[in-house]
Amino acid sequence: PGCCCCCCCSCCCCCSCCCNGSRRSGKRCSKQRSKRVDPKSPFTLFVKDVAGTMWTLEEATEDLTMDAILALLRPRDVRFRTHRVKFVMGSKVLEDMDTLGESDVHPGTCLVAVFLDLKAAVLVIGGGSAGRAAVQVLSQRFADQNIILVDVQEYFEHSCGILRAYADPTVWDSIARPFSEAMRCYGNVHFIQGEVLSLRHHSARVAPVPEGGLNFTIRFEYCIVATGCDFALGKTGDGLPWKPRSLTCNQCNSVIGLPDERTCDGRRAMVLVEGQRLRDLHAQGGSILVVGADFHGVQWVCELKHHFSGLRIFLIDALPRCLGTLPKAAAIYAERYMRARGIVTKYGIEYDPHNDKFWESLGQPGKVDATYIMAGFTSRNKFMPVGTVSARGPGGSGGWIVTNMRLQVCVAASGDRPGHVWAGGRIFAVGDCQYGAVKASRKNNTTWDSPTTTFAIHPVPKTALAAVSWARLASRNAAAMRSGRHLEQASWPPEAGIVAVGLGQNDGVVCWKVTWVRDSGEPVLFGEAAAEMKRQLTWPDDAEGSLTQPGQWLATFKEGIPAGRLFTETVRSALHLSSRAWKGG
Image 1 (spheres, rainbow, N blue to C red):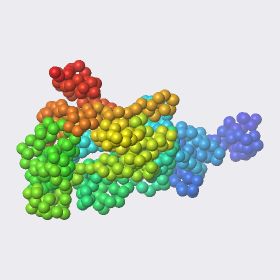
Image 2: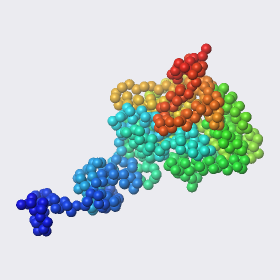
Image 3: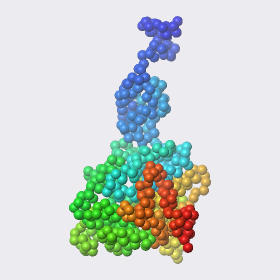
Image 4: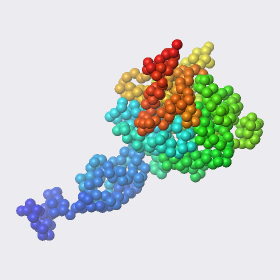
């Protein structure tokens, strides 16, 4: 009778009788269930955290999953983007694919959001060339593990192509990608926009970007630090916007009203601002001084002259020639190009803007309209423990991460030599944030001042290919350490000295140094062939794959070498070139 009443009777007394029986038996009857909200009917859902912060979702439906609710809440609070989040109702923890209806969540119900610390098998700090190369290797070797990439910017850009973007703003979109898009090809890699404040043995403290949320912790087993470096600013504070003003200290020192370059829109706007300034100077017949005549400075003045022929351009350097780190033949070729286009070059001269004699030596009666400092480097490693960074290093300044030959972060001993490994050897440093060399661990009292005995690995150029090479090795070592295998030792990477210098759009010089010795190496390509190589490395046809996976750059270089090009056996074997790049006599 109870079953019949429940299924067929529509009178109130029968329903009441049935429902009362259901209460006694601990079950709901079908008549009671029929009064529930339609699965497609919207209702108000409340979500709060343990501190009492409340969020209201006005358009919730019973077929909404916990994962979909999380997506709706991400714009509301940065913690929904940076933390692992679990929703709890009563004593039950709800799973990502549970629906509101299945979980008995109805109008008026309040879910509790519990924010958990993030955990990763590997944390990669910095998404530049080195960081992206590390992600590429780690995603395969830790295929069943979670990998987190943290960067203060929401995008990365191929910085060697940024100069041309100031003249042609459409170029920027071809050299930049949002991390959220670039990391989609890796199923186990998650990107978080934030600035690392401190690094400890097994955890990193991170400030969310943009500001407004609470700092949070990421716990990890292994860590790859790849935060890069900046150009050192001159005494006047002038500098080239080669890299975005992204760190908190740079944001505080930047001019009020400038775009927030941590975002894609802000960086694009900054490129437009800088490009407009150059166009205004060009229209006025203005003057520009570039300090630093290595490959960055040479390429910059050539780009300026190509796109803004009305500018008066000066290039200076303390060294006796341009391209001081590259072979002399490359310097001669670049110097001839610059002089033919009216670029004034002065070498063996220090930048001294407050001295009238300095300007007289340039043949400039007064100060120039704009100055770009492209000499010297400064580190970006303030989050590292003081004991793990150098007292001196590239550019004469300290703050560079000290590592051993396995690229494990070490406690810095006297003379910036690597002492014992820090954090159990589970944290590695690669790319431009690293000291740039590995000091020998013991002194030789008689020959310690000799370069061959001072370094176990001699100073490595701060180039993208060098950063990629060591990032891949460190990633392999993290995987080897996890499986109990021996770790590889790094050496001076032969590809570190590959440099493509653009001289305007249709000329250039490509050369390499296969050893650390000054003036070593040889030019590979000149003229239009070099310009084409530069294009392939900087603005590739397969921009999506090439920018996301820096490991392809060396293959692009090898493929661009003409068949039958004469090279010495040392050069050819060092770069593992095919037989078509055969040795010379």
